[in-house]
Length: 295
Image (cartoon, rainbow, N blue to C red; front, side, top):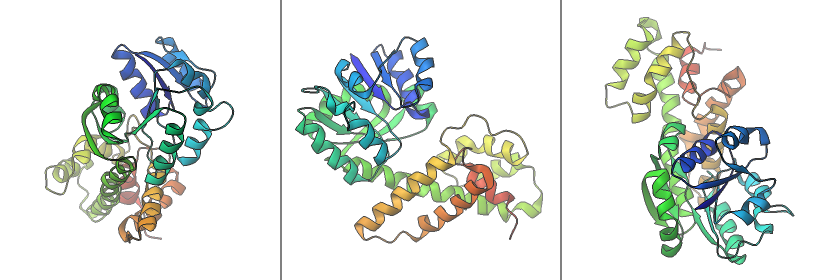
C-alpha cells in the first residue's frame, strides 16, 4: 500500500519506520526536511510538499503538533487538500481538541475523501513496535477501512464513536499521567531527607499500588537522573506535555468542566520548563520537583 505520512516528530518518525517494516511503500513530508533524511536513506520517498504527498499516496496519515500545524499542512495552495484526494483515506493522529478534528473531517469529506481520527496512547518505543493503543473516531465504514493499517501500528484499537470521540479519550487518558509526574515529584521531595539511594527509592515506589505502568517502565531512568546521570532517550518531552495539558484545560473550559488539578499541574510544568527541563523527558517533572528548593 502507498502510505503518506506528514509529520516526522519523534512519534511520526517511529510510526513511519514501523510502516516501512510492515512492507508499505512510504512517502513522507515534514516541514523541516532534515528530519526525513534517515527515512529516505531507509527507502522512503520524500515529497516536496503536502500536496505532492497526498497526490501520490492512497492513505494519508498525519501526526502534527497542534491545530495551527493541522491548518497549515491541510490548507493552502500546497496543502494536502489542494491535491485531488477523491476516494482516499485520511488518518489523523494528532493530540488536539475534538472540535479541531470535527472541523477537519468536514473539510476532508467535502473533498471526496474518507476521514478517521486515531490519536494514540504510548511513546516512541511502542510506536516502533506497533504496540500503541489507538482511539478511533469515525463512521463504522471508514474505521473498518482503516483497521488493517491501524492494527499494524497498534496493539489495541478502540472505536469510541464518531470523529471527535477519539480526541476526547486521548485527552482523558493523558490527564492522570501528567498529574502523576507532579505527584511523584512531590513524593520524592518529602522523601529527600531520608537520603536513600535513588534507585532503591524508585524501586520501593514502583512496587506499590501508587505506581502506574509508566513509572514501572521509566523508574530506572528517573532514578539515574536523580542520581546525577543522564535520563536516556527522550520519548515525549516536557514542553510537548505542556502543550497537551493546555489542550486538556481548553477542552474542560469548552465543556464547562472544572479541572483544578491539571490547571495547577500546568503551572508546575511551566516552572520546570523555565528552569531548563523543557526538552527533557516529560517524566523529568518529577525530577525537577524532587530537586526543587523552596523559594
